[in-house]
Length: 98
Length: 182
Image 1 (cartoon, chains in turn cyan, brown):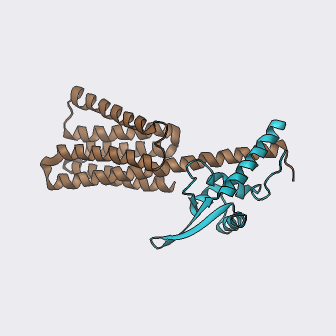
Image 2: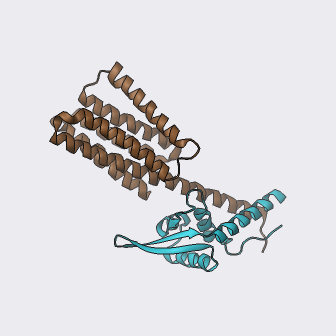
């Protein structure tokens, strides 16, 4: 049996990765506000967790201005997707091994 | 690090919950954009009608053809066109218009006001039904705008046409904006 991914294992980062790898989010990613709503985290907390994921190369963060408002978009990288898939497989293995 | 079966189960449930919410959020966002597009077309239709009152027949057809075409394009652009979904959407529009024409024209012989109210409320009836699957927001919009349109029909008198344009046009746009943020 494998091991849980230490980075994804944390609840907020798990939610972020689950959201970013959900069907339909593949290419376009999600913006910071959407992720905040989905994770229930505060701005600072979510920012720190996204940084953590970015340092592990699990997500890409891009910043742009839409009109006058700054917009941060987060997308899962190939490496992040693979890590998340491995983590989910590990969780399923535990359940199956019961 | 090791995980118990219960912890693994909780994490998988958490993942399912997030995926479900992302899916719902995408449905709301797309439906909001579609509602705003229909709202814009309704306002454009009324503007043309106000300038050229005899144009109502062709503007009505033009708005519906454009609305259906834009809706299909938006569905396709959003990546929900796979698995024959575009054809199903087209079939849904065909059924919608077929049902509407049979009742409003062949059986009902509705006048212009009844036509305006009937088609708008029939469209919103679809929102009410969608609400049973996709979330309470659709139901709230369907019932709320239907009530406003019926109130305009019953009480607006000579202000019927501007008010029906206002309610359906700006109503769809504001509901669309709300859905995009929901």
